[in-house]
Image 1 (cartoon, helix red, strand yellow):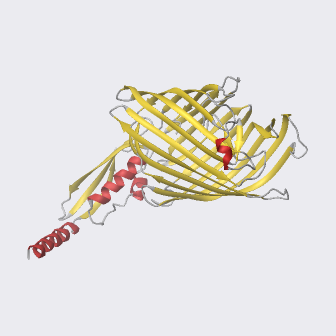
Image 2 (image 1 turned 135 degrees about the horizontal axis):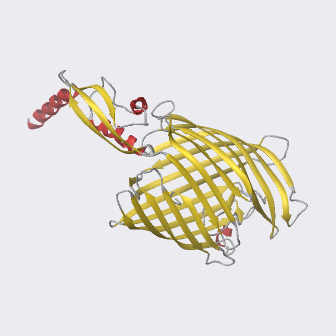
Image 3 (image 1 turned 45 degrees about the vertical axis):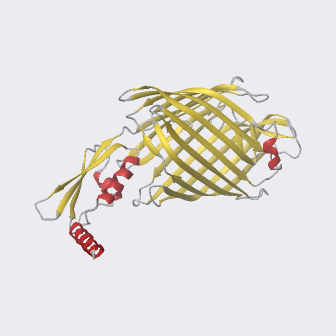
Length: 420
C-alpha cells in the first residue's frame, strides 16, 4: 500500500513539473559571440518543458567552446503561470590567437612555424586561420573549421596546405636528402554524437613531389617522383577530459584511419594506415598533474624508403631533430609530470619533467624490429609553461630533451599549447 502511495505521489510531482514551460531563452554577457548561435546549439527553446538537466547539458557544451571562458544560467518566472524565462550568462574568451613552434638540435637545425587563428569567426564559433613555416623551405596552410555550421551535431572543415621540407630517405643503411612537397585540399564532414563522442570523415586530394638533393643513390630508388593521390579519412574521438584552467583530469582516445591510393599512371600500391592516441591525465594534490600519451600506429608494410611514420621533434620525441628515421609501425610513449610553480588570477607558471620514448618497425621488416636497440630512442628532459588563464590555449612552452640512447641528439622545442 505504501509503495502505491509513493508511486502516485511521484506521478503527481512529475505531472506538476512537466507543466512548467520555457517562455524564452535569453543570452547575456556575450559581445562577439552571436546570441543566435547560442540559441541554435542549445536544446532549451521557447515552448519546451523546463528541465534543469537539459539546461545543464547546454551549459556544459557552452563551456567546451573555445570562445567561452565561463557560462552559467538563471531561471525567473514570468507573469504567466507556469512559464519561465531562462538566462544563459556568457563570459567570453579572447579568441584571436597566434601560434608559434620553434625547434633546434645540436646539429644546428633550426625550424619554425608561425600562425594566426580566429576561434570565433563571425561570432559563430568557427575557426579560421593559417600558418607560415620555414624548415629549409617555405610552406603555408589555410584552415577553416565550423563544427556547428548546420546544427548542434553537424559541421564542416576545409583545409589547404602547400608544405615543403627537406626530408631524409633511408635505404640500404644509407641516407639521402630530398626536397619534399605536399600540396593538398581536404574536406571533412563533422558529426558530434554527444559530449564524449565525435566523428570526422572525408577526402584529401593531394600531390607528393620528391626531388633528390644529395646523399646516397640507388638505381631502385627514384631521384624524382611526382604522384597524385587520394586519401580517405575517418577519425573517431572519445573525450572524457575535465579542465580546470591549466589542470586536466580524465581519459581521451583519438583514432585516425586512412586509405591512400595514387590517382595517375604511377604504379604505386595503395596502402592503409591507422593510429590511436591514448591520453590519460591525473591530478596530484593542488598543484601536480601527471599527463601521458601512448601512440600505437601501423601501416601497410611496404618495403619503401618513403615510409609513413617518422621520428620527429615536433611530433613525438622532444630533442630528436627533424625526421631522423621512418617506419611502417610505431609505438611512442610521452609521459610528464607538470607542477604549478606560480598561480595568479590571470597567469600561471608550470614546470614539467618528461620522458619521451619510442620504437619503430623498419619498412618491410617485422614486429621484432620494435626490440632492436637501433630503433629504440629515449629522450628525458625538462620544460616550462607560461600560461595566460584568460586567453584560449595561451600556453607558451619550452622543452629541452636529451637523448640517452646511442647516437642521440639533444635540443630545444618551443611551441604554443601543451605538447599533448
